[in-house]
Image (cartoon, rainbow, N blue to C red; front, side):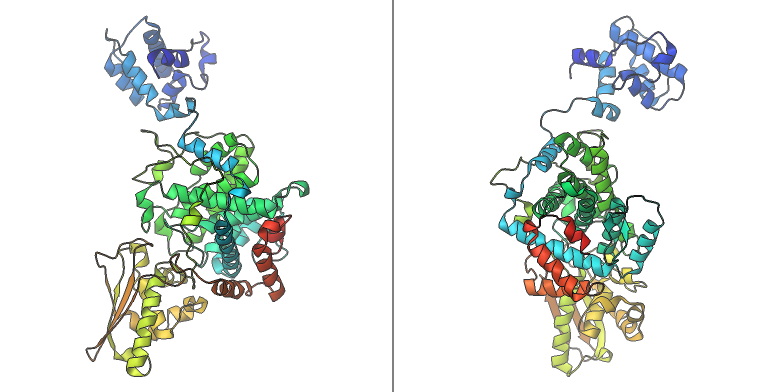
Amino acid sequence: MGAAQFRQIFLQPLQSNRSSQFPPPRGHWRSHLQCKGDAHREGTDLVCRRVSKLLSGTDSYSDPFCRAAARGDFFSVSHSNDDILSCVYKWISDSPALVVARSAPEETVTSSFASFIHAVRPEHLSKIVRYRSKRMILDSIGVGLVGSTTHVFDIALKYCLELYSSVAVSNVYGKPGVKLSPTLAAFTNGVATHSMDFDDTWHPATHPSGAVLPALLAASQMLPPNSKPNGLDFLLAFNVGLEVQGRLMHFSTEAHNIPKRFHPPSVVGTMGSAAATAKLLCLNMTQCTHALGIAASLAGAPMANAATQAKPLHIGNATRLGFEAALLAARGMEANPFILDDISGCSGFSAFYSIYQPRSLSTPNEHHEFLLEKQDIAFKRFPAHLGMHWVVDAALSVRNLFINYAGSFSPSLIRTIVLKVPVSKYINRPFPNSEHEARHSFQFNACTALLDGEVGLSSFTESSIHRQELRELLHKVVVEHPEDNVANFDKMYGEVAVLLKSGDVLTGKCDTFYGHWRKPLSRESLLKKFRSNASHVLPEEKVETIITMVDNLENLSDSSHLACSL
């Protein structure tokens, strides 16, 4: 923006009437001065008069004036004869407060995402994308259903039931007859999905389904009968939510590794939920842009709450708040139209990553390739952090060697257990004291696999966690971090070495566990997991109905039937 354009945009005549100057018109440079932080009208007025004179050519002030104004120190301004138009121009044009006042160019990263969300059609979904995404939907529903049996879910449900709502239309996982308002149903079902850390994981690392599916299920029930999306519309919206999450994760190399600062689904999941519901609700491109911007202001949760009851809230909030962002955009709320772009001095989505290189998302055509087609998903066989699956499979290998060696597994023969795992503080927990800590403990999961020959739902009960024989085994564990074992779900490995008192060493190593995207679960294994999970809260007939419904989702005339079956 040149000086002439700068004058045209920001140099609007000041009104002589003092009261009419507060507040100034939106986009006026004077409103920028106010937002710099000074509460005194006299000081603001002084700066406004001086900058007005400066830019109209009737006066000039020194560089210290600009510095003082930038600090909000409006009373330390001194006069001089230097022309500081360029300084004021740079100060104002670089300001984050005015970024949203600029007209968005025709093509930005943010607008390209909005264009994709608005323009993508069912025919852009390939057979493999439909197949993989339906597996994700089925697994996520099953995980949510069994999650509805947990204590943290009960807390969330009670909280939501106590909130007044006159629009209780959306079903809750595993609670026939219970309905909540759409956004609260999304929240509660999101909490259920992640309550056991049993939900799917993608690469770069996030839990994509739980952040999107509950919002879509609730939204499908919210819409009037003549506007219900069909199954294909639902499947498309689900994939839009996945695609947006995946593309955002690829903006930063930092996102490829096991996270340290923000829990990924609380960041990209919120954006994915906003995109998915915006698609299902048929928002226009401008509304899609604002939905993403609003969602960014609702995103983020710290990794410090991993292994606590608060962690499932990350998924619950992501799916709920993304949903709310789309609803707010549909009602006319606006946000920064550059939210995904990398703008110096004004962090948008880039605030979540120290390394950030955004790329535009091309408008879909017949050759568009969704990320899910290139990168499959990981499904968990037992309810714990994904990293646990490597050490469990390695430990099971060692246990088999031990039985062949000694005839049976006898902890008394063990001197030391060595775990070789990546450095990751929040899943290195020597003596977990709760089910949530146990789900995030290399040591606990390796020792449970050695002791019991399996890890499952019952492994994380209070009695299992605190049994004496397990505690004795935990005291024998030593953790090592080889340099070649990086904290990345696509590159890490788990190795377990059992040093016997006889001097012999039994070793097992897992590079790729069964369920990882390189070794995906078979349909039989996925259905076995779903039936096991769903049968905790639903009769067999309903379980089989859901399987059939998801298998034939493209042919479903009313997608709300899926939510009603839960």
